[in-house]
Amino acid sequence: EDDLMRKFAGEWVSAVLTRLGMQEGEAIESRMVSRRIEGAQKKVEERNFDARKNLLEYDEVMDEQRKRIYSFRQRWTYLAVLFLVSMSNYIDRNVISVLLEPIKAEFQVSDTMLGLLTGISFALFYATLGIPVARWADRGDRRFIITISLVIWSTMTALCGMAQSFWQLALARVGVGAGEAGAIPPAQSLIADYFDPAQRGRALAIFMASATAGYLIGFVLGAQIASAWGW
Image 1 (spheres, rainbow, N blue to C red):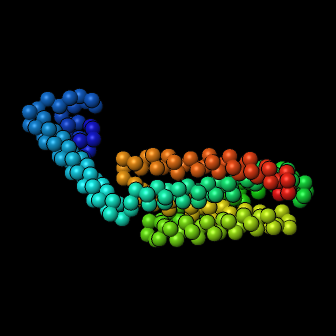
Image 2: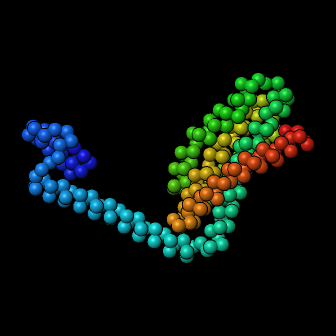
Image 3: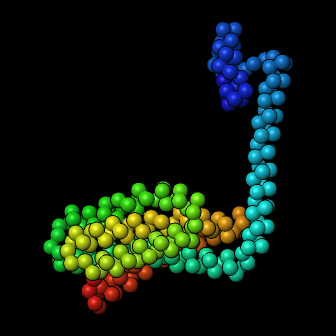
């Protein structure tokens, strides 16, 4: 039994062969059966060829549309904007890591509460909203989704700095996670539209480098600001 038999022959064929005394793994030595297998293999190859052909034709059509709608400069400008948006995402997400000691001293909280602040309070909505936002991005205006997300997480990050209690800060971090959940899926979808398959890998690699840049800036700049003016 193999993939071809499961696809082009029913279970009754396997049952008949078993009754005829065939064992698992035993080769079928029959010209008629061999011809049927060759025919099944040809059908599989034809299906795969048609699927590849349709994908290639789709890519050719999309490539022509890209050239008409987006110029070379526009594509790379849009990528630069998305890079900055994603970098802001990672800065806001990680800057709190260098502020934990001042926060602990001011609010007199335990390490467990700090773990709550950096863990579940952020991840609660960040993890659960990612799939619905990606689904919305498939059907809605992706630029609008990114804009709304940017406004939400920037506003909630500002509210983190204005918090007067630990729970106000934790609630603001929940808002940061909810806003940042809407950034990456629509951005990656837009990049797939802007760049053809030959350039898409490089464009996505540049975009994902924003995470490293965000980590670096968040840690270094956040530490400098905290030491100079406080968290």
